Amino acid sequence: MHSGGASLAVDALSVRYGAAAAVRGVSLSVSPGEVVGLLGPNGAGKSSTLKGIMGIAPVASGEVRLGTVEISGATVAARVKAGLGLVREGRGVFGRLSVAENLRVCARDQSPMSIDAVLAMLPALEPLRSRRAMLLSGGEQQMLSLAKALVSGPSVLLIDELSLGLAPILTARLMATVRSMATELGLGVLLVEQHVNLALGILDRAYVLRRGELVAEPPIAELRADPASLRQYYLG
Ligand SMILES: Nc1ncnc2c1ncn2[C@@H]1O[C@H](COP(=O)(O)OP(=O)(O)OP(=O)(O)O)[C@@H](O)[C@H]1O
Ligand SMILES: [Mg+2]
Image (cartoon, rainbow, N blue to C red; front, side, top):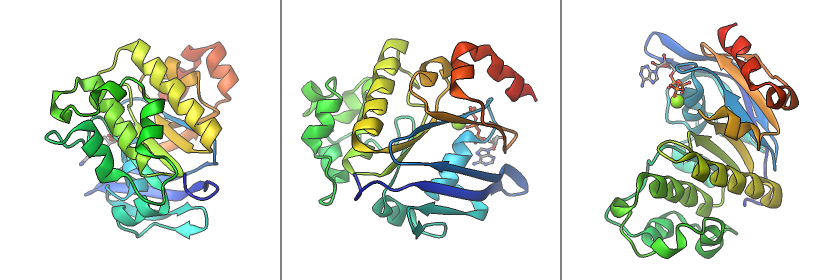
């Protein structure tokens, strides 16, 4: 991880695609070691929020800070260097490269997470080290995208739909891995996950986004006791 772990602070972030505002005035924070959920119905602006934080969606206004570093106007590369990572469904996997080569491309000298350490956390990938990424299953490619983000040694990881194309049992296993990385390494995680029931098991806190705006921060214990209660926030 980056030295000591840094908090992510997002202040009044707005993302706009042309005339359409997808995210409006979103303020949130993630502390080191915390797994924070960003929940909400389809089209609420969850992915756009993560992309705005990462600098790959058009940000109209707002501030993003990582620790004491203001990264709002920074390039994606500079954000990665500052300690931010984004995992998107099967994105950024180089098909012609092997698993190990994919990881070597992303590994950084300053990162305390070596390729071996990351593979130890994702044991299903270990035997696939020398296989080309294009020959991996969808789920294995998901794991590889997570592994790639990890070897860059982020202090805060943004995760968008880790479960896409994965069987529930595998999703649950990956969730457990994410949880232990947060707890043991002080990694901060902002998690978007369609399978809310699986996510609830590992979340410390959650924000609910609806039509581009944060509308609630329901206590996790309440959601665990009654996951269906989320619907009231989704519908308003
Ligand atoms: N590149 C884009 N250009 C124009 N509009 C976009 C673009 N990406 C997303 N949108 C719109 O912005 C809104 C928010 O989309 P976003 O993908 O952030 O939602 P989401 O909460 O991630 O939804 P889902 O749960 O379906 O993934 C939607 O109305 C969507 O149609
Ligand atoms: Mg999305």
